[in-house]
Length: 253
Image (cartoon, rainbow, N blue to C red; front, top):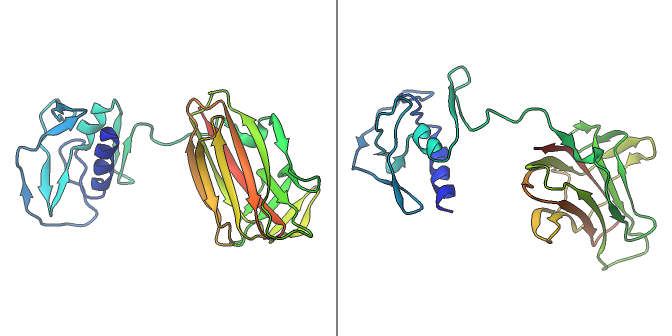
């Protein structure tokens, strides 16, 4: 927890200061008083001496009431590489960015689908789903729950995907379809009320939950699935029939 707090401080400072080479970098000029007060950095109870790329000690400082830490020095404490891209004015800590996905969830064979009712269904998007912003998606999953003739009762369906501890991250979007044009479904599909998507691991721990699925979507998610053997996706609703899509389901090792 202490490590996480320190990193949050570093990220908050990135917009103002980049000390990868002892250089202050700002998009506009700024004059301010800087105070050095022999600030110490403690990590898990032990003092950490911040150094730059050349091994020189770099002292944290205070400016406008905010304490700034050297990016490279703190990143080194967490065994992360640091790179400054002057062209884009970007500091990279660790990987410069995710490359192409190692897999997609909709290409993994699910092990169990419980529809909850014979009229419910889940299918891989084979065609196009369009949201209320006019954006279209051509991969992922469509879920449908039928509420015909029922009221005041929660209905749900679930699907289980094996990950076998193989991946570190799952990213994607929750989309409310305005229209669906696939090999099996066509037309306007807005039917939603008190609807939620929940993703849990094999122990029932919630990895992600989206409540109040509305036309203002999509919602983006980035889930840590390190060591997770399987995930369970649940769609639940207390309203009318419900259509929801999960798209761009990228898995990273």
